[in-house]
Image 1 (cartoon, rainbow, N blue to C red):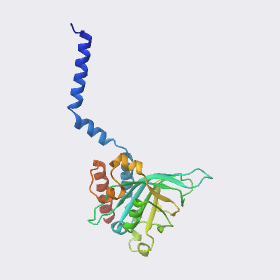
Image 2: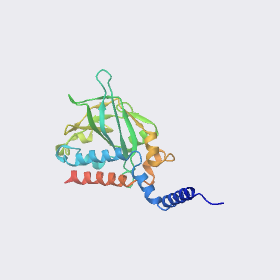
Image 3: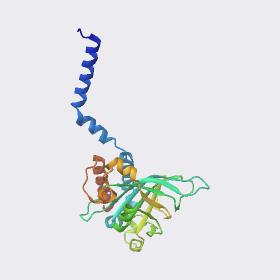
Image 4: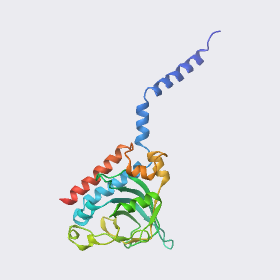
Length: 240
């Protein structure tokens, strides 16, 4: 039986496509890894940290960051419409491990609460500095409400605060906001910090729970290394 030349051509084309896709798995896999969900949020957090490094005279005191056991960054927290109240933002939180290194970022959401917004501000970057590791661990195990489960206070700002007694205050979390080029401590109470399970599963895989993400050395995208490097660079810049 004579083969149809059209069918023969189609068969050859399909075979060629199968061979070509099977011989370059590393490239297709790399592309998928580079665009995994959550990378944009980490990238935005990196930009917030870079902004802090550019305003060391009026930013987080170096000594406070040096002693911090946890750090949360929420880029572009949105103020709810008039009459509704509350805020909403998505960000990351990291804990300083016992070896002094920062953990992988855990994806968390900031919901509700009463913030001391400046007049006319509808969006701001929020940064939380944790004085102890317990706060981050409580978020990982469930959620925390700022001002109820843990005390929170507007953080001291600038080099002048280095010798201030403000750094010895009993607040467990210091809160800051950056909007329209201005960085300041902000009153932030009643907001709930909650783990975003979907975002973490998309970034790390469903098998990694919050505790594993924070305390184990799991495989992560290159952008996490950039995040750690940016935080360390911020620490060095503030000390200069």
